[in-house]
Length: 65
Image (tube, rainbow, N blue to C red; front, side):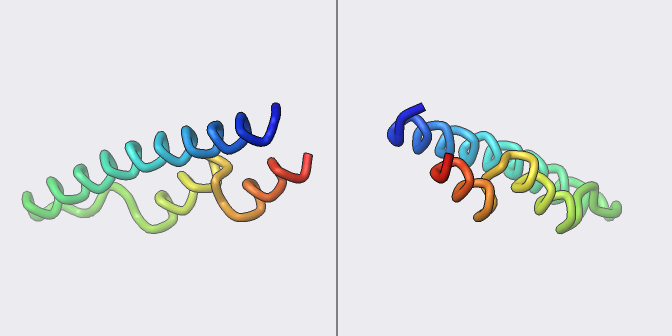
């Protein structure tokens, strides 16, 4: 992959993670409205970033290779 392709890939992964996070937040909002416990915690959101590889080290590794 060239540099532009790598940047586009990282952007796509970030967008996918954001869409997933929005769904997770919507579920939490719904549960809050119903007086239920949250479905997703901070750890779940952090895992989403890790799994998508869009954390600092993941992005830096992509451009190092």
